[in-house]
Length: 162
Ligand code: PNS
Image 1 (spheres, rainbow, N blue to C red):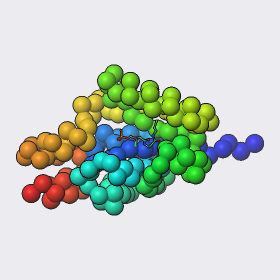
Image 2 (spheres, helix red, strand yellow):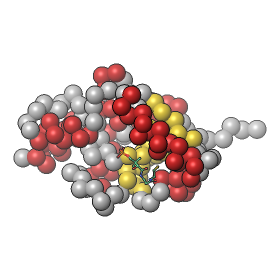
Image 3 (spheres, protein in one colour):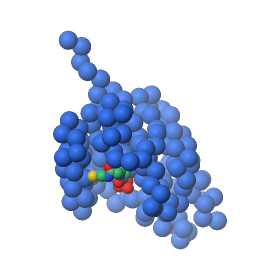
């Protein structure tokens, strides 16, 4: 019997995508047949980048990963995963402090859809302190973000904060 293709969703806000996100996408793309990076359209949040800008940035920085797609979604993640025929939700865990929130989400998603499995991966140790929120803050205050985000993202961030 031929093995079933495993499709994974990597959901998030990606405001903006960081080197930590890219590290996880690259790791995930080596394991899953198709990895769908799914940006949440959340009208309640006040993002720095529009959803279209985030799509463009993520498509740009994942060009080298042939089995990675970038999309947006709204509503429940589990419903979107079913629409995409995904069996896995991929999330990154950087430190113990991420664990509680991630565990709550994973267990709630399992309750909503027991067929979906959440898989956690750790980014490279160099990115364990990295978050989109801190990158935005450092950039807004004039700090050096070159080693924190891909060059295409840095350019857009600089343009946003001038
Ligand atoms: O990058 P983030 O902001 O930590 O990502 C959070 C995200 C998008 C994964 C989460 O908010 C989500 O899945 N939202 C979709 C709505 C949903 O399904 N909520 C129930 C999750 S248990």
